[in-house]
Image (cartoon, rainbow, N blue to C red; front, side):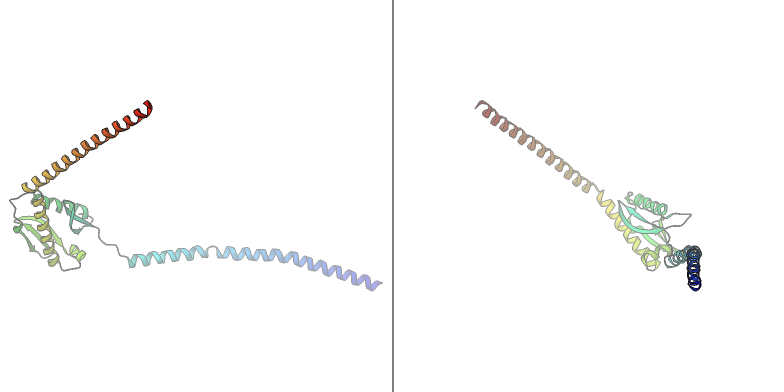
Length: 217
């Protein structure tokens, strides 16, 4: 009997110890998980930031910034592109060149044969007589991926073609022909409007007669 009581007491004590150990193991396990989570938190943003900085640096190296460029136009047609810098932006430079070309084109006394290229040490000047049209730099020639002299001559030819077209479109004969076309189109539009009005009035009268006959019937 005494042995049975001792055995029962030992079983209860063992169960109590196992329950106590189980109760202590769960907080330890949760604490271990929290420690791992807190330890890993600063690492992920740091890795992400490092990766972002590396990708940004790689992008900056792989895609170098190019100087801005702007189009030189005449009558809305693009002749070529030029580049600019901080002191002389590309848009302002292109606009100034376009205005000089337009002024020459509007002056019939300036012959297109007078346009020429004068090579200087660091630039190629395109002149109309003694008037400077533009100065083409090496940075401008890089846009065409060709030597500066070749690009300057091509730009001169484009300017000549643009001036010739500008003067042709504004010649008295062309203006007269364009005016005749405009008057002809206006006359055709008026005739169409007049004819459409007559047709609508005829249809209105026909519908009115039809309904009137039905009402009388």
